[in-house]
Length: 153
Image (cartoon, one colour):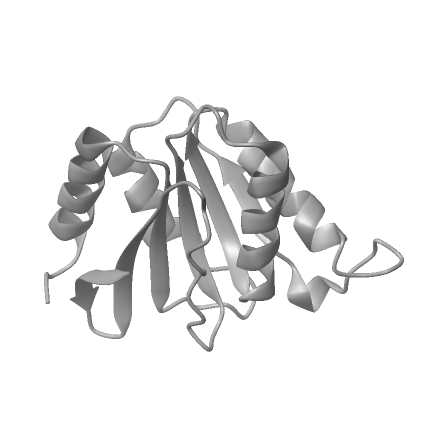
């Protein structure tokens, strides 16, 4: 994981997960926002579910899904959150918001993450661009969009 840009107390991180997808999601110590950049059309549903569960376990409170079959990521995180309670009814104070951004540009998704993800008592400081799979073109676009919105460290 690497820090891409920072402005005040807001930090934007980048992490690429590649098969076999055994890299751990970082623990920021506070709730955070994740942009899941789905670049692997062959990812197995059980691996997707495990990554989603880890995001929820590490206190990710807002997930923006973009890329290949992004709506499945949105659903997968919703299921992971619901499964945190044995009655499938977790408390609202642990809510994980999810959005799907199928037809949007990377730039629009980064803008949305920075301007529209705070909710309730949540004012996020850490943002994680989580690339699932590999695409040097998408990675370049993401890093460029992040750097254009925040000051580079």
